[in-house]
Amino acid sequence: MKKFTETLIAIKSAAAFIFVGQVMVYVVVMMISGYANTVPFSFIWQALAISLITALLQYVFFDDRVIKRMRYSLRIVLFAIPLLAFLSAFAFIGRWFPVEKAGAWLLFAVIFLVVLAVTTVVFEIYYRITGKKYTDRLQSFRSSQDE
Image (cartoon, rainbow, N blue to C red):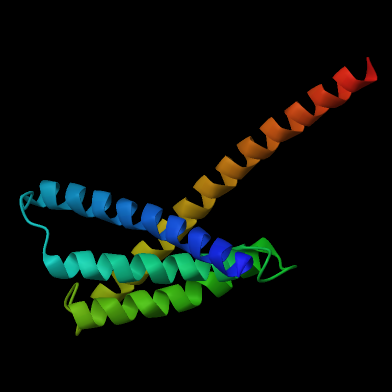
């Protein structure tokens, strides 16, 4: 039961961050487009569902409790494929763009890949900085123990 609760908390926390990020981007895009006073109720439900799905996929593919050993690049690919499928379904059902135009789908895929790449780079930088901090703290602790 403890592991189940920890899993739910991890997924809920990630979903909350993703949801807030989506809403922030949406609001900025709407402000730029001149629609600053409108946030359709359907967007809120879609954003919530996308947040939960993304958080669940993140947990499955990036938490070592689920998949013990796997190259990071393979994790990203295995994460991206179902996420793109879910987002494509939402885009199609929600008519996010003219779905009958192949160029719109191509642009959608390019935007997805760019966002995935930027997000991956940001997380990589964050984890390197965090890892360096912990390494420095550990070295400081060890040197204080040696004295």
